[in-house]
Image 1 (tube, rainbow, N blue to C red):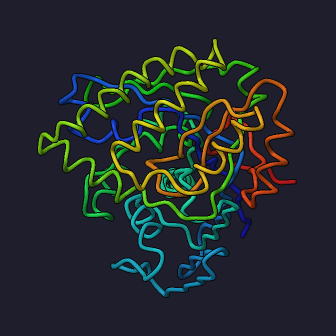
Image 2: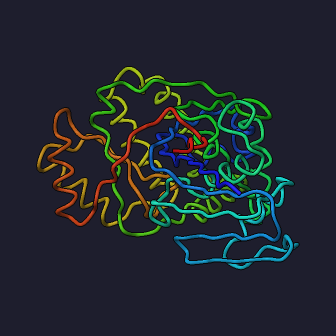
Length: 329
């Protein structure tokens, strides 16, 4: 039987994280989040038909075989099992490989969820797949036993850069075209420390629901930043850098643990050397990757400095492609 090869991108988030948690966006009267698919690909190989089932994660060194599809999640691959089980058509064999560091803040589990659902039902990125995202949101809440944000699914389900408008039961998506100057000056680097966005989001969520004034003020500021980011992304790289910096500082007010020693070191050195323009953590923060905008024409200098600091930049670009099947060679 032939093996199908599929690829699904992870994402970077520019602004508005945490606002995609229900009922925060409903209570605030509507919000926007801004994110984009990037060309770091989670690879999926699928075989359909035949006897038994097999799930392999090359990165976790897990290889599980079953005579029949399991009725309970197997240890180590609970999320994979949950999405495939919900699809109604789990494949005979599935192999997963991700080049992204664990705890990256790049939305790997959500993007993988889109990849798993799409490959199981044989559906590539597009509006039809994006309409199925609420299924994944509810599965994630069941998996985490906590409210789940759902902006991270859409770059994988649609591709490209997106403004997601949270002003109804489901988000409206608006496609954005980032300014060429921004694309030239955008750097993503890994701090070497896994992030814990689920915990950070959950603590902010509880404080928001409880009416904590500082939390509500910080999220109100993040909402305004996200609206401005949606407008700036296509028009003004300098404004994007300033908004990243503002959002990063607002997130520190949500949780001081968001900013790491590595981030402080990058900001300090970049300002001294003249290449730093703005930065925020990817995801809700507390480690993982950071999104950095450098001053015009100084990308190579900044990347060399990051490597010198032991904070390797990732080789990635925004991609218009979401989940897709790779043609057979």
